[in-house]
Length: 302
Image (tube, rainbow, N blue to C red; front, side, top):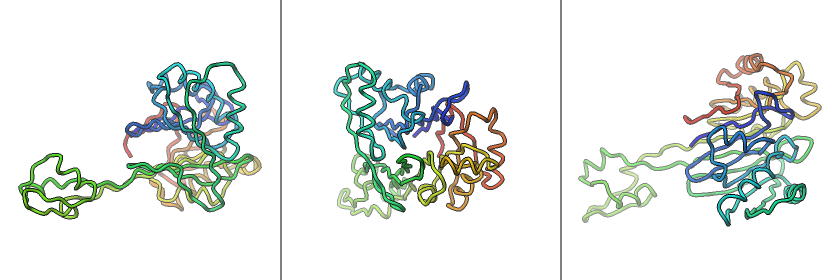
């Protein structure tokens, strides 16, 4: 699993920060969280194969979060034939996507499957559920329909090699059922999976995009191993943040702290800040395990 920040600016990109986008690689899945202007170029610089994208999760339809979609689709159309991309987003996504395709002329060869998500207040709903992971979404409070996401790696069983040695059971395909939580019989010997396996706890990575303070922030942040949260302003501009339904660095840190998150990565910084040093300090005073993300930051250890 690898997480790559492709854009960490807010509405206006700067010379150092692109518009919002994050790429998550998990086994055979390439998951793009938002797709701001210039995202596919950022992917190219980061060494990410653009054709590896399988899922696109849109938080909301402001331009700095979706401006790179049409260019990426055009590139994907030149790749493998019959490729399917699943796009999830808030209510209105189908209409906005239809308008997006009409803005320029190209032959779209990608099969696009769109699912609109409309979680209610205080509700966490499942977006997709696969064998090793699932994704949920929660309603956020912005000036247009907006949602956040949590990516959960499921708990998994692992073999206790010492236990197998004690039972004189060798490695082999017969062990597969054990890590699937099933008992086996090997050469007449019954083996309970509970006796020879242990649980590797799953992980939770959450994404809080553009929003004011709301219940959804707490649902997403709750016990997250990694919490990625917007921090558009310092707290001295809390009134401005509230007006435009954004968060300050202090508020993001408070969300992480009260919900027992393990690590906080701040993103979506206003162009007014030439340096994020003060933003990071403001957050770390409340939640020490805070890092201000930067473009091309890669996280491999969770």
